[in-house]
Amino acid sequence: MIIMIEWLSRLLPTSKGVAVLTINDSIVNTDKRRRKATKDLLKLWTGACIILEVGRVIQKIVTRTSESLISISKTSFAIYFGGIMLAVFTVFAWRYFHSEYSPLERWQLELLLRRFSETTDLLGRSDNEVKQTQSIRWEYQVMKHTTMVKLFTGGHVSLENEHDIGRRLLAFMNKETTRYWEMITVEYDTGKVQLHFTHESEQRIIVDRLDVMPRSESLNIPLSSRFSWTDRQPMGLIVGPTGSGKTSLLKSIIIGFLANDKNNVVYTIDGKAAFLSVAMSRIGKVATDGKHAIDLTAELCRVMEKRYEQMNANYDSERDQVHAKLFHQGGILLVADELLALVATMQAEDKELKSAERLYPKLYKNLLALIVKGRQASIYVIISGQMMPASILPTEARSSLGMRISLGRTSLQQAQEVFGVSNRELPTVDTKHYGGLIWLDGLNWEGPKAFMPPMYDDKALPFKATLTELAESRGGGGTPQDAGGGEHLPVT
Image 1 (cartoon, one colour):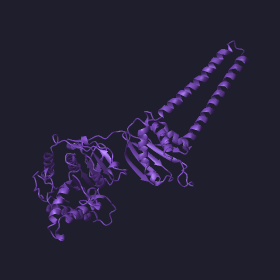
Image 2 (cartoon, rainbow, N blue to C red; image 1 turned 180 degrees about the horizontal axis):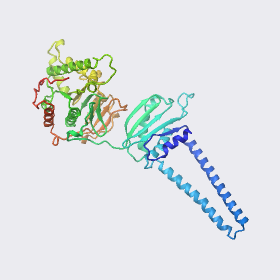
Image 3 (cartoon, rainbow, N blue to C red; image 1 turned 30 degrees about the vertical axis):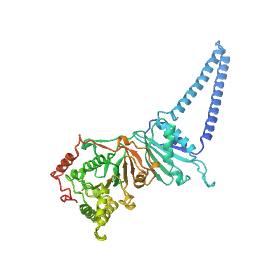
Image 4 (cartoon, rainbow, N blue to C red; image 1 turned 90 degrees about the horizontal axis):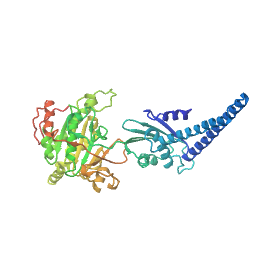
């Protein structure tokens, strides 16, 4: 009964429902049973046709018909061979539409998953001969833009092999089919692996008007057709040399964040006091030196503590949500651009100061507090620069940065500092078209992925003019603020 229900779940080629496939034997044994069943059906059909022919001959003899018995034989042979040809055609059509060349992905997946299970020996014995996987179950669903595949291992597959299934299945499907497969997400649970695939190659998004950005109280900034910066990864790191597209990416993120919610606020630290500091002074507070950077981050820490007090004011409240969703007052984004340049200057000044008066430890303390504790208070931090050595951003802060992006060529040192892997393990990047690498925490990726960052169209959406327009729409008057620290904006 269960086998019949599973077969029916896989029968319709265009169904949007979940198909179930339980595998408890090898393909060789399955094929043996199929061949035996085919032989038995052929014998049954031959026997039925012989009985039919004998019955007709007897009928003609009994009724003493004048019709020749040979004509009866021709009809019987036509029925016999016609039935066989129809069966052969049906089998070949079924095999084709269930093969790796099938245009019907739902039927194609059945064979792929059977072959993958055999290739990876999911039904074989483990090192311990006592334990043997009796069966595995696949569930899969073909949707408009994605394909969901879920494997239930029954707990008999080792944890190491279980966590390697996503990578191996992706490589297998790209090898066995003519379609392009890309794994979007993979999630692991005890005895279960769930994967989402797509056939669509990543497309660069162009930020040329405000309405291309989604509106939401949750952090949701599209970075490409496939990747988005969300509150799963509220803290980010962006590195890249001059000309790699870092400024264009920062512009897209800032405009996207301000368009996301009219209550959102952006604070800026610009270590080189360049374009970004002048532009961002139109809508938010800006710091370009060590002292003002400390003051700005200290103020944000006070705002964070106030927000925590608001969230914890009701002792009996069961609502465990971020501040923006609880109080609808928007989020706060701190962009620390060219942090290395700022820190280098601060550390040079610190050499002439006493230990208690040194500037950088104070800035780092504030940044670390915001990075570690800011998410619940809807405070987000993005740190960017041409490079980010561990001496500037130690491990305890770097490990809390859930979004990490490297634009342009990634050196061996940068691969270790940003992603914690060798650059030999990194995918190929299209550096000619400002490509980069991205790592998003919380999606169970096995490593960083190549991606095409957004392109900010300055002609269609002038950055400074857009910031002024946004400031005026929020009642800010669009008056540029002091680039050294700016006037204090009311922040809830």
